[in-house]
Length: 575
Image (cartoon, rainbow, N blue to C red; front, side, top):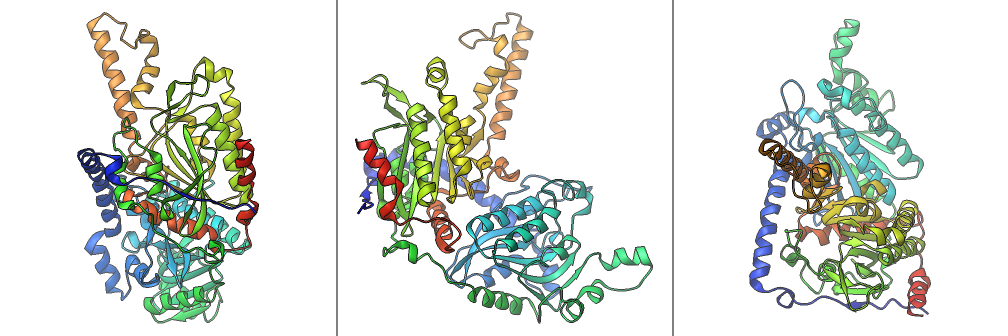
């Protein structure tokens, strides 16, 4: 019988770094994290006291108040897409749309992980802004991939009309939300909707395909609001009168049950979740309990250098993310620029594939070192084999990226890195196991793709406050853009002072623009990553993702650890 033998990794913090170095790195990271915390607070504040007062005047709860009542007392709220539209303004009044006017968050309800999609009723009455539909669909897709119940807290006055051209048409326009409703239903994913207020046009369509639809006495659902109907048909009416619970519960059947107010609606939704099948998380722990890491996850902000040019030991990061800091490293002597292995998170098995930072042995030139943070032939093949084995065995796979790309040059071409890289991309494009990707620092070039970046559909991609997502660094790109004007040492060829200054200014402008593009807040604003997490929050996020990956049984392959393909891979490598 094959056994999974996990071994302790990691060292006490004092053995990893001198105290002064740790303190300096911690301070650098905390400064980066403060920006993220401030931006999150702005999103949760919505349109401020004025928006909250307007909601409370209608005897309704704000969206964040509803979420606090909905979740279990000991459950976290783990939003995704928090900073979508950050830094952007819309319409003739240049209005902001914090979080794109919608909250998409994981949490636990009645002991089960769920995805909650809730219109922010303090922001333009829950209107849909540019990127709101895409954000909602991303939440729906995450739920579909892990078979999580979806709870809709609907309070939506339809499209933000001054920007309707950016939200209405297109393959991921607002109408695709309703297709996702149908896909979720067809695949058996529970959907429960609470309708709390204005639900006009798309806001009215969104809950209809749900398995259960509750309406409060303050709510209404209409294809078109009263103002539009009066304009079109010269009739006097109210939206509540034409689409309130009297009509949709009592006459049309578009909703199932009417409830007095927000609190009663949330309680009813919780009861519906309670009636769903219980979680399989305990079953797939195979008799083990969830354990905290032996080394404190709160040390991570000081162990991961904010300066992307400073090396660190990735095994020390892993040791502060996994249960009891125990890890089975698979193929440790091959492709040392990457680390692959299996650990438990919350008592559940997870595969981990990570970039190593620093110098490693060069297998082609024994006794010499070469830089890691890039992919060579052996490492690429190792990642491909490990990725395929995790998919075959049904092990959720976590990628920890800190990568500059693939090796380049004559030797790389002779080694066939294009072919090996394509094999890795094929593996990650066709795998069936749940995948999460964390961009620790650098996420550059084709390496970002090959290691399951967002274009390769991980269930979840997280960034940190020091993530740098781009094709290449700003200086490198500037050299490439002005290559014909530079010598072999990348010095400017021009001798004319004005021409020389123009080239210098142009290179500086390119470098500064790329550096701005690599800001993780920019990536989060345009949905190039799902969420920026603080380093001390990373363990909690991974616990949630791992538990969600195992919560619902029967929809994907999960092999008993005794018969994993990984055992065969390890035996063959030893031979």
